[in-house]
Amino acid sequence: MSPTESKVLVAIQGVHKKFLHEGRSVHILRGIDLSIDRGEMLSVVGPSGAGKSTLLHILGTLDLPTAGRIHYEGQDVTRYSPSKLAAFRNYSLGFVFQAHHLLPEFTALENVMMPGMIRGAERGKLEKAAKELLGEVGLGHRLTHRPGELSGGEQARVALARALVMEPILVLADEPTGNLDSKTSDAIHELFFELNRRRGTTFLIVTHNNELADSMPRKVSMRDGQIESDVRRDVHSGPFRGVDLDRTSSPPPPLDPADPPG
Image 1 (cartoon, rainbow, N blue to C red):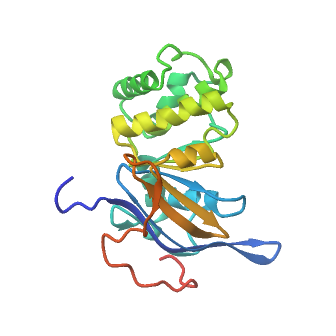
Image 2: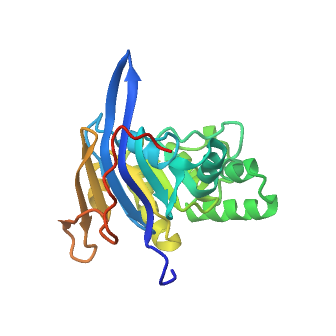
Image 3: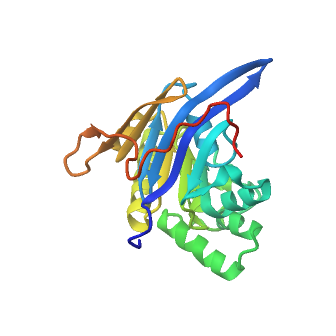
């Protein structure tokens, strides 16, 4: 990182999200401010309905906030055109969901290659990268197997490799091990840490798994559409310690909740 390059990868400022439901306005996110540094790993926890998945979708630009701003590497992506936003999401972000969403008619290798194939990436380089990733996640011997021939844990590993194949700046995972047994979940969780150490990948993981959340270097707790606490753990000394949200620069001026994104 150059001396002038910010360590902040993504910063969201004053984010609100409202939905219309049966003629009523439902306020899901209520003024979220959050920043994530390059190479950081954090969990997002909270009761059902707290807004965790909505926050993940907004961070992933799968949805836009009703008000507020999302900056990636200093660029306000809420001002992007739909086509530019789709291109940014496809090239810069990786997603891992509980259901995995693997294509059943394709092999593990083809599923991992799929994001690059859609973008027209050079096949030889793409296949090499996909094979290397499947080797890293312990599936180098399962390249030609289809999802129906893989266990749940193996499918989760394929989905993780697919999320990483285009070298995204951020991987967003929503309950990635929610339907796996505890032993398999633990193995996948350790894989997240290994990939973070080896590749420097930035991870945000929404989870109800308290053991995973408490093992992460940073734990963000949500309730009623707001951040209730944001704590970091000193990996050398063990316990979590409370910290303020990012203070590397002057805080942005407050935004009017009624102000729509540009």
